[in-house]
Image (tube, rainbow, N blue to C red; front, side):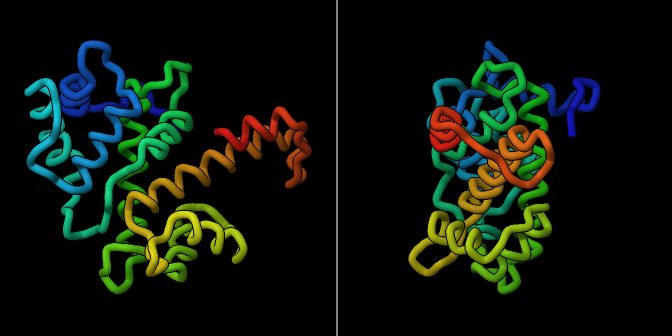
Length: 204
């Protein structure tokens, strides 16, 4: 759903101002740092300003407060963060502003709830079986072939998908569904692409 400025509470707006710096925008590099901090609750973060570190700690505790023992993660990739910005960037700035970041935060909280709901054995990761049900709850109906491709791309050697992989997968799926629906102008469930369209889709 679209988020208006009035939908963002003053406390979140204040915390965003602390972590976004003078430009009030969050780049892919900054987003990677923020997400890694949130899911691990690491006490140390490489930063050039104490304000950023303080604001990020407050955001971690006040908005999401994810315990590192609840989910497994080896850190968000820069590509995932770029995909997030590509999906949510509404003004073409290649960064996230206040409302865009608030939308992301709601997504992360939603993804975390889905992840925990379907991590049936409390391992902190998703098996391929758990992943199928989790994707369905998140709104993505995909067949077994797609599930196999997802596991092949996002799972580790034991075929488990950790939280950052889970988020990366859902963001990628949302992007692909969005692009498909944009190109499927007749709502026929199929599209035709020329070479340049395919290249743009593949690179994105």
